[in-house]
Length: 143
Image 1 (spheres, rainbow, N blue to C red):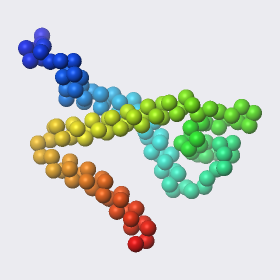
Image 2: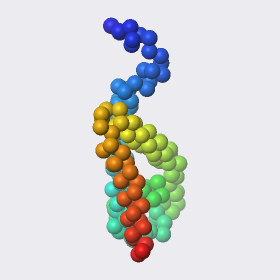
Image 3: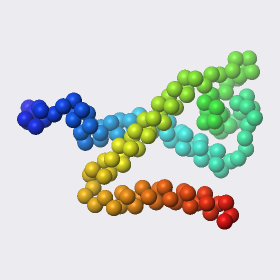
Image 4: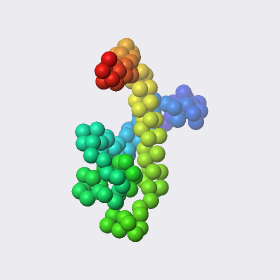
């Protein structure tokens, strides 16, 4: 049975409650985690192995084919010359993943602020997460 305060809540009050935000964060995270891991790992391959293919049709090994999915959003098949693959459908799920990952990251930051009494570690983490990559890029330019 609902308490009087829960009964008087509006639709938006329930939608943006901490409980519903945690659930949204949880389900979006679980749904998109496999694809996020795929992009993280294939992105790592792009960084450590700089061998680039001229087209998806040049992919021969499984690693090259996986990298092709990351770069071109197609899995090169055997008949790639006669019937090239279309990236349209995969791009839809990739764009959805990017939007959902952004939402779930923002929800995670919001929940960090809402659940911790001492917020300075959250602020320090966010500021370091912005400044450290900028510093490393700057140092990498040989200054």
